[in-house]
Image 1 (cartoon, each protein chain N blue to C red):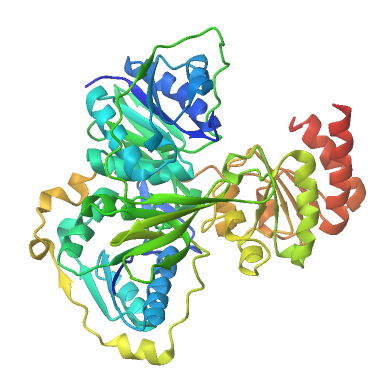
Image 2: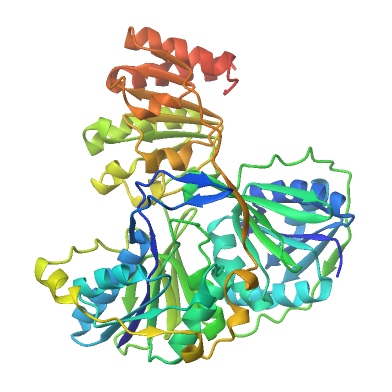
Length: 327
Length: 262
């Protein structure tokens, strides 16, 4: 058993996901406290130079599982390969991003290893050599501290919580190619249906502009989308807007939607039901626009405008457009 | 087709969470069927209706009150419900919960197993996937659309991912974890509710499941909460209510200059 931390670095569309670099930074800090190294592993096919950033951001060693059978993610294939590697390396902790891939893979892998898995974590501390992990529960209405059980322990980590280190492009790390046996894969992706246009993913977004019932008509989401486009922001929606059929569920922020942690959350025409607040209250800044001065969302907004969003939002869009042009 | 649906009873999402002695205080909690499990139940009902045949069995582990959740599922049309209950199960973590469910499933016939994608209480989002691994069958998680092949031997499931949707093909039996959007759950009819009121739900305990009590429950938990805290209350900041245009310009500048957003 070692004191190393292993990061499973997710590759999407030929590049390392941002959350993987955040994990390398935080994983390195944890490994330092435990007295071990930061190891990373990447699975895919034809990854080539894409893996160099892992060393730049702090990995001490990188394991590479490059095989046609791993070109597309499958929970079974990836579990088979990772279970073998983890069995050999015996790290103290295995970290994965709490992405749709990480959340799908980690439980299967944890079951294979009979390892404990803490989901969607937001904090790590080492006390007397023992890991204490913080994770939100009840969609963030409360926070739980989990003490590690037998090692290796596993955690999926929420994107946007930890800052990646400053990269050092001169830093190198040994790369070790693994012999790969992906084993039996029963569930396979047969098609990827991409959304039309570029969409900023809510859980990874730095800025989110969300709309609620106050928009009155589904067409009025155009106002939200214009403001979001100027800021390079993701578009979100309240449950009321989703249940009314104005937006697909993948846009929903809150307890039965996504829990988000952007730097800035702009809530337009959202009163702030307890389930919605749970999903966005860890945003660094909250800016609410609502015509009802008693809307609960104002109780936690850093900035608020009590007024008609149809008047306020277009002005914001214009103002930010000017500011972006001045930069 | 034999359809088994794993159900969890959770606090209503309206619940304000209180903490007492470092753990969640449930003294005033109202319990409901986990919202994601409602999509799971509905999908089972729709498959059965589409095929014109099938049997839906609900299973759940939890204390006595869990029977209410099982009855809710029976009231909308499931045929059978089994309550997996034993003192030894209390405090089980996701792995142990999946282990308990897997032992029950070993005694049942199943072609497809549904779970909600996560319980909206502890939010682990693990049980369904661990269950698939323990049963050595494939899984597809966070499913928003499901098709069953004509021969009834495989599925095509669409799962939500960051950039859109993935279509995943898998042979049955398999575990599906349901995401919101999969369907629109029906309400129980008065007749349905009345019919299940007095229904006796069978209980299976650790011994009947062939489970070693030491492998489940609080002491076996690999994920246990040593402390639960409430996040600090956010304070309200600068709220403007004079002129929408001037207020918007003011806040835009504050966001740039004070919050350094741009």
